Length: 222
Image 1 (cartoon, rainbow, N blue to C red):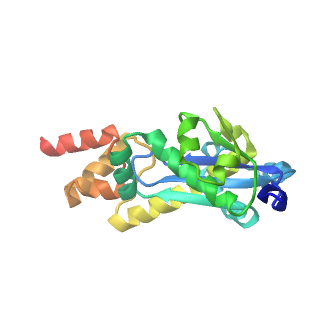
Image 2 (image 1 turned 135 degrees about the vertical axis):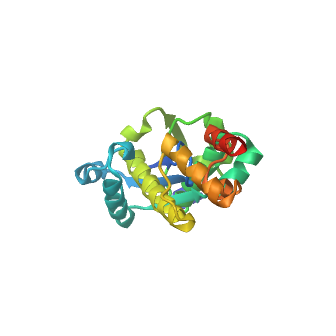
Image 3 (image 1 turned 60 degrees about the vertical axis):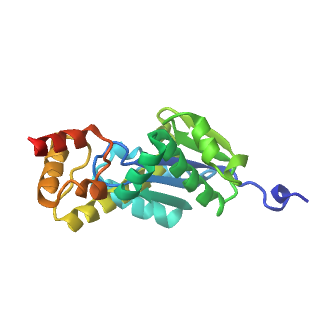
């Protein structure tokens, strides 16, 4: 009897999404959630939707509920590790693929599911290449606006909540509130940190390949 027959595939699907990709400060976080068949209405009633449409407070509230009720996995890549990986890979989509693949494998080790839906962030080949033994047997669907799917929306909330938690902790560590996004406020905060600690601080708190880094350092050289 094959392993598939001994451990039949569960109906339902895994959704994955990331947070922090466009934020200068803080980690890159990828989260995944297994949504059993017939559970869509439960998430809908909870108010689950794309995290970008929720306030930070709502994201934190929903994440606490989702974690208690659903099989999930989270991979957080802190700035120091992110900068190291980016320097090696020189490709954000490959880094994302690696993180999505780790999340998928972690969930599949708990639930034998056959369908995975992710947001369209690059060539599907990168994710397939990064998947290991369990992940190579699933149907992988990458699509634009995947957050419309409730499994992906729930994953986006888990990812954003983890990002917010880690960003706040990082800010407390350096003694400065770190802004979200890559706005002029982020540039101002980066400049203040470099003036206070030296430019190596950016390795610890920021994604150095952002153009903000050049602008911040150009002010210092003047």
